[in-house]
Length: 187
Image (cartoon, rainbow, N blue to C red):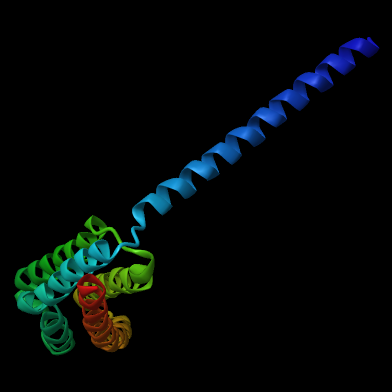
């Protein structure tokens, strides 16, 4: 009986040790995977900066930010007569915002650009949040709850202001990163 207890304890110890080893191996693998996605050469920095700048500038042509401002005013002052047009505009904006945010996932940030990469993704999330709040505001407006609609529109305005500031900050950081990467490539 005493030997059965020892055998059971030994088996439990082996199982726990195997689990610990599996966890360590998994963590090590994840860390290696993350570090393999961070490239530190001047060419990789230049490639990231060039693509990120192109993506960032491309949004200007889509009119997403202008659309947010327009929809905010339309929802605040319109009746639900233009329902299908407003809903379609909100849905299109939500899809475009998701596409804008997701395009950065195709980039491989460098150690020097990781913070900017995260900020660009955050910018996309904020734009998407604006459209989500517009959708909520429009739903409340259609349901006749003007107070909730107004609250959601205030949230949209606050998010919009944050996006505008972040876009300018990201633009400056992208310009600086481009200059840095071009300088490093020339050496």
